[in-house]
Amino acid sequence: MLRLAFASLAGTAIEFYDFFAYGTAAALVLGPLFFPSFSPLAGTLAAFGTFAIGFIARPVGSVVFGHIGDRYGRRPVLFASLLTTGCATVAVGCVPSYASIGLAAPILLLALRFLQGLGLGGEWGGAVLLVAEHAPPGRRALWGSFPQMGPPLGFLLANGMMLTLSAVLTDRQFLDWGWRVPFWAAGVLAVGGLLLRTSLTETPQFHELARSGGRANAPVAEVLRHHRRLLLLTAGALSIGYAVFYAVSTWALSYGTEQLGVSRTVMLLLVMVAVAVKGALTPVAALLGDRFGRRPLCLAGSALAGVWMFPFVGLLSTGQPALMFLGLMVALLAFVTMFAVVAAYLPELYEPRVRCTGAAVGYNLAGVLGGALTPIVATALSNGSGPPWGVAIWLTGVAVLSTACFAALPETKPRSVGREAPKPVDEQSVPA
Image 1 (cartoon, rainbow, N blue to C red):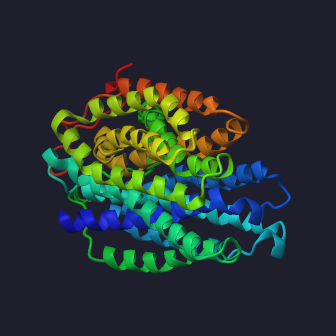
Image 2: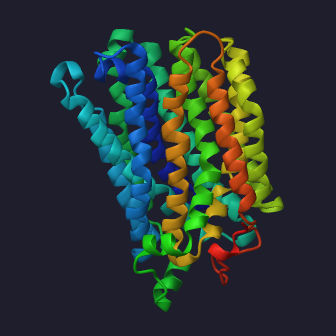
Image 3: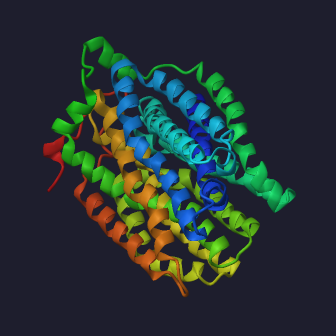
């Protein structure tokens, strides 16, 4: 289990490193480099628009790689998704700026960002199921928290590299070539991740499905036909997690540097420390999920997010690092309370034959509402003097939606996902 868990953690860390390197670059440099004819605000919005394309691609990747995972095994998904994202990320670092090739530059950026999202859409489902379907039932949330620690680790790697380059290079050097270095480094990380995954074995659950002839012929069609309501509920429930995380890690970075005049280095440090604490608390929250259940923690986290969004915006708008950090940290505590147990919760909600597709599509559909739209909406709402309360209203609204969806989902803690006979949650078992 430890070897499987660390292999999953390393893979998700590398994939999310790729994804977050783009998000940080979008907040700091992509606007002036690829949309120079726009105003600063419009350039930032355009850069976040290319950022959003990755989230739109993720459900597509979930369908493509989910089909592979449900038909041919969880293990092939881990190789194909990592290779797709790694190659696209290295290529982003090689795209010439608008000044060099004109309109082709942002078009190439959009295409590569789509490929990034496509690969990441498959990675989460494969990595989570690899651990969840091997784990003992009483510790499924704990072991499932390992791939959930991958995103904060990837974020720290990406932003740590950006912070180092920002500190040692001049602004001119950073704009000319420094921002590209984290994208080139993704190639080395991808090769390491592929080598690490060569020793992984297929899950017992999939072996049983293959032996019994229980694999779905068309997993996505089966999910849409029999689990459509469950899919929408899981997507709506997880939306606030995405909204909170990208409000903290992407919009706050742009807002702090561009609107409040806080230095790039200070903002990166504040966000990185908050994310590091969040990552360290992930297994703690997962243990609580094994003890008290998945649904209670998810409800508590989404409710805390709804209550905290106005204080979050108020503290952030002060421009005082200590107060800004408090706002960021509590927001991420709400996030980790929910997402630490998601890797156990989603697989338990879907029956084994469509689990890779259903769990991954539900998870990544939430990213479209919460992750793709939040930086764009928040940037548009924060253009003016005074605290951007419109951002707080948006985030609170998403939190209300998510809390209602979590309330409509069942608890799955007693159910199994691995070695013993599963009791899948179907459309009829989800309460109205």
